[in-house]
Length: 383
Ligand SMILES: *Cc1c(COP(=O)(O)O)cnc(C)c1O
Image 1 (cartoon, rainbow, N blue to C red):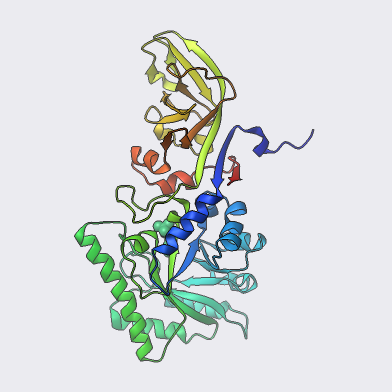
Image 2: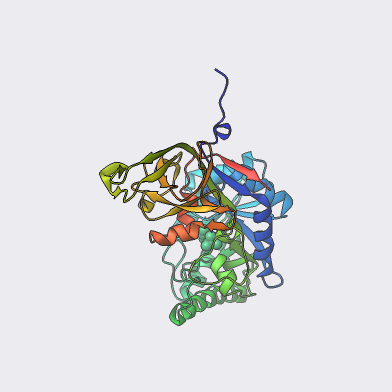
């Protein structure tokens, strides 16, 4: 049998707009004060958008030279793709993998003094693992924690380890996407805490190249000029850190999720649709069956709650989303036929549905929608 490519099947696919990606990167950069450089956070397969298309676009077309991922395997995948830029691993790598960090020439986040000592010990003699020290200023996730004096002394100890080359310090903001005055104060205090550590270390003669604390929301709502880098994730992909709050720039969603109509049928009033009979037609209804389901990452929680786009019009999902299929109501849409394209999110004619809007219907965030699109969905680059 000839090899069948999933791209060719046109069953369920994600279109990745590289022109939107480039436009978003420019918008992200426009938010940054002079002297603050963009770092591209490309963890989780570029937030589900696919590294194969996105990484070359970011590195070659957008001129991004600093990247961040969540773990060592993601870093190796980027090197396999030929990425030349620097790679920071934002999460944990077991100390026994020190040699892999060296081989891939990646920069490792340091969680605390014990981890730093272990990693240094595991580093082959005469070599140094490049790293950035994580500082927990209020997220209560990875990083050293304590008052200013404690932070300075912990950091100093880590800077002295023979197997490490500490090139920077960073923290992660927990609530930069909030307009609540308490949260705004909290964010500012997080930033001040990191900068106080930097000053404290400088007084003791400890200096380093990079200081960073801004994520997308930080850059959008707290563009403090005192860092050297800003770590943009979600905004590159045209989604918002907080869909309820306006962004200072206009972004374009990079991913559109599409599928096809496999069958159209007319059913009588009183027909039960899909598993569990949660929906019963109230009138004679034209039902289109669509070739996508929750195994493709379209959330089953959207059953009966969301619409899709077809022929530039909105159509309701009828009953439960199945694993590989779903049914929609096309009674009021003329001429729907087998093979027609259905847009789950994206735009069609004058209508559009965003991943952020779908997320809001089920109490989550756009991040989870795009990251959840499953591996069986091919990512197809478009202009
Ligand atoms: C994921 C992540 C980011 C990017 O966050 P966005 O909200 O997507 O911009 C930045 N820094 C760290 C440490 C992260 O884990």
